[in-house]
Image (cartoon, rainbow, N blue to C red; front, side, top):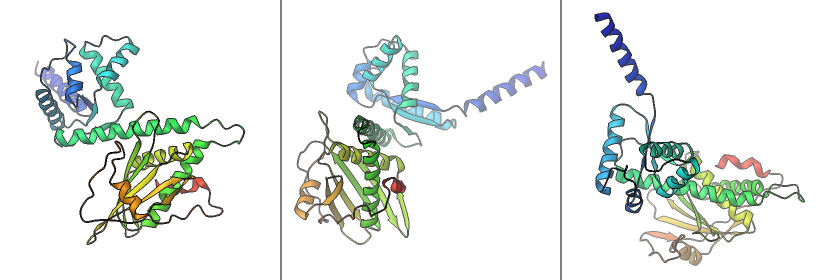
Length: 307
């Protein structure tokens, strides 16, 4: 009998150890409107959004305490309803919500839970979701131009290669410092496509996020491929100096420098809404720097290292 209990104990211990190696995903209803939409389902057990968020945060802490790697995704009620309709699932069951969460984890944007409060994690997650949506839409604009049998080229690929060249030239030209770049390109029927990239360089080293650089180049490429009047604004911070803001507009497939007045107008306008934004103190607005174009013999595909 003792031998049987020891064997059962070893199996339970092994099972617990194995459970710690199974990743988990929690899909969260980030705002009141999405939460209210889910209350139509009888199987959804929450009545108050604040209480729901506290329970989600408690669950995340519990999973982390057990050593479980956990990612967090956004739960979109509209996407959930469409998923259930396509999969012929009853939306009013926990099992359907679980399957939708697994789908979001596999195909959507997620953020790894590392003990951060939910009030910090949710804005980060929303930014990730918006970045992915921007990349997908910009990619669709590039894909529309791929049929060019008469010229034998792929316009989308060519535009993306040109965008990576521009990013490389931009980084080389502005030099050392901490740089915050924003690329904006008008889009039909939706708010402008906006990509944000954070770059740090100095001492011969360059640091930037690969995913953010991909989105930045894709948005810029979409502007090039569709010949839309986009632009780039760059803010530079250097130790002991006032921040400097410069800008360029996208014209004929390249960035052209803006004047100081144009930079001020561009930076003090919300790219998404078009509303004026008050100028910040201790910030210098300067004309955009000249960006040398591709040199003779340089291949457009040879500058991908910038991203």
